[in-house]
Image (cartoon, helix red, strand yellow):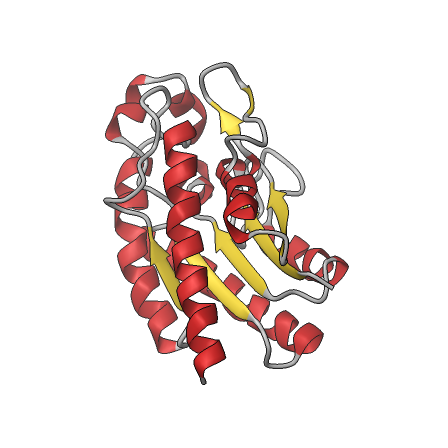
Length: 218
């Protein structure tokens, strides 16, 4: 059986193309590129949902709470060798009333729940990576996406990864920060473009490859 890597995220894992409102093709989406880099020994599973939050219900739309879906998602794909979670962009929405610290708390809670589920599924044999998405560009406020997102989303997305890194370190959970390596597009400033998907896939693959190599040497 090939090893499964589950990519659990929002529209930037699903592959939203801000240029025309469609979904990027398999040649562009970062989980698909990760499959190309990882090779036939791995099965990359895309679990991206536009609008997904970490642990909070959106008052306007059903089914977006990542915590509520995590258990059936992971059990349906068991056994899982690696779980990659990249959330937080939607948690910055003004209507959700979360501070940057709250957003980090929510993602940490989700990560700890993921650990519990993976231990039940796999025992102690799994890898878990939490990815902080690129910060939302401040220019988003001048686009139509700000009508839905509200104010100060860029500030929250810039600040919460610092808190998140500290919280995850307390639990020895692997953290990947994309800031300075991957950036959002220059259309709505909150979604990846094709270059961003490629850079993210390379960043995550290099991290996974290093971890797996270190484990084999133990």
